[in-house]
Structure formats: structure tokens, C-alpha cells
Length: 266
Image 1 (cartoon, one colour):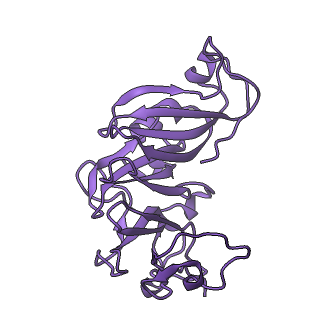
Image 2: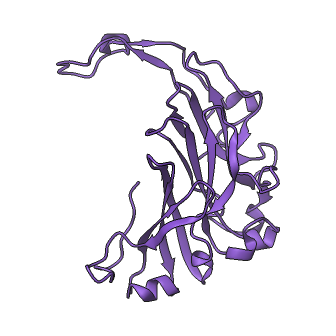
Image 3: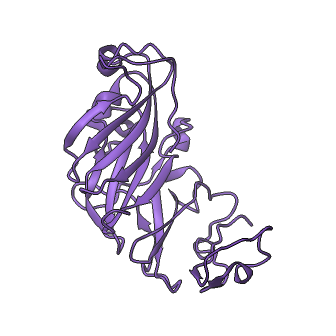
């Protein structure tokens, strides 16, 4: 059975002068607080319905364990991400997995039948990063697709095209506001797009990253980018309003795109 396992550790000593890898956590000066944990197994996750895992440690010591949101009884019914929250002692804090994205009315973004569309990427990318500067929470990012087909929020901006969906949470796993379409209407043009990541800056703003693989759009035309894929970024306020961008990290002093295709590693 495929499962995700992890152990909570406490550091006892500085790691100094090991010529070979330690044979155990204790030999490396680290004391395990818990035993091996397989948090999703209790919900019925196995190798047939479980993938795309992610774990982050929050500044208050809590640990969030993510997987792709899915109906474990019906393959193909998916919905971004969901997570289980653990305290520093390894005790589970939320009674049930928490959805990773929320609508404006406070309801979770629903799970839908992506398998029935034949799509290979809809909602399949995910990630999360803690607010390391302020310690107040974390940001979740996903790739959405086919939102018009399923009648989901943000469809008026992106139709059925792929886009980055971002959601803020506090350290207790409570959503802050609703999900944000990071690049607005930019990714609504025909072609491909890939979500890459999002982080929280020290002032609370959010940087979102993606790869613009569209055939053409106003942004690519503005920077004269004739490339199969272009790394793009945008800086957003916590409410989703644009602070700066979108922009391409690889431009010259005139703001024109440099080189051929580029990919983002995050």
C-alpha cells in the first residue's frame, strides 16, 4: 500500500563532523517526538487514489500534510488540495481534512469530474509554503482548469484555460479570504499555462510564479517574447489586488524578453 509517512523530530545537538550518514536520528543528535505516521491511510488512501503529496512546517510548530483533494471512492473526482494539520507533538488538530481552496461565500471549491474531461493537468499541481517572515500562516497554490465547464468561480476571467489558484491560511488552518486567480485574464488566451508556486513576502504580499506557454497574449507581445514557454511572476496584496506585474524575470533594460524558452524551478 502506498502512503505518505513522516516523523516529527526535535534537535538535540548541532550536526558536527559526521563523515558518514548517521544510522539513526538519535545518532545524528535528533530525538523523534513521534513514531512513523501515515496520516492519510485512515481516510482510505492507497496507491490507486493517492498522489501529489506535500508537507510544510509552520512557524508555530504545526505541520500541514497535503495531498491532491479527491474522492477516494470515485477515481477522477478531484478538487485542488486538502490537508491535515498536526501540532508539534504529532496530535491531529483538524477533525477532518481541510480543503485547500474556498469560494467567495466561504464554501470550499467543489470537487469535480476531471477524468471525464480527458484533461491531464486540471487541478493536478499543488504546493504550499509557510510565511517564514511573519509566522502568521501559509499560502496554498494549485492549477485550475476547465472552470467554465464546471461552472466554478473565476470562469468569467479564464474560461476553461489553466490558471494559478492561490489561497491564504492562518497557522490554525483557517482560510483567510477566498481563492485568488493570480494572473487574472492573462492566462485566458488559447494555449497552455503551468502553475509553479507562490510565497508570502515579509510585508504580507504574495509572489506567484507560472510558465506562460500560450501561443500569444498581450503580455508576451509587450515584452517581444517569441518562445515556447516564458517564466512569469506577479506581486499581489493579500486580498488579491495587483501590487506589481505581471512581469518576466528575464528581460533587458528596455523590458524586452531575453533568450529562448525558460522554465521556473521553485
